[in-house]
Length: 95
Picture 1 (cartoon, rainbow, N blue to C red):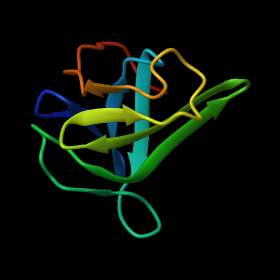
Picture 2: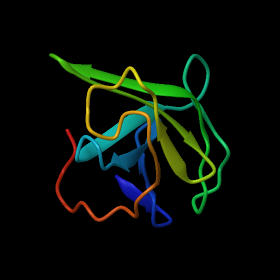
Picture 3: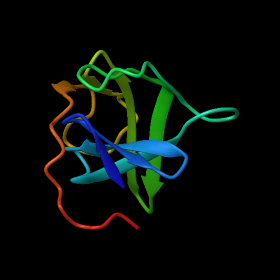
Picture 4: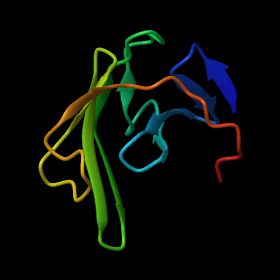
């Protein structure tokens, strides 16, 4: 995993951003049959939306112009809110 500016990390075949609602990284695969990214590390836009579900926990968001817009079908405290995409500060390994 390597840095792409302050907000994203590059993974094999994709990118990962830090989600403050989940307190974890969300990875998206880029390219055919995957997501697209506007190649801006300062104000990324990732399409389509990102949906993560683990047991009863659901995070559904749109990353647009450097902000995360959490959709109302999310089950965490930030559902329905919009926050700035945080700088990547996590130093551990993402599996």
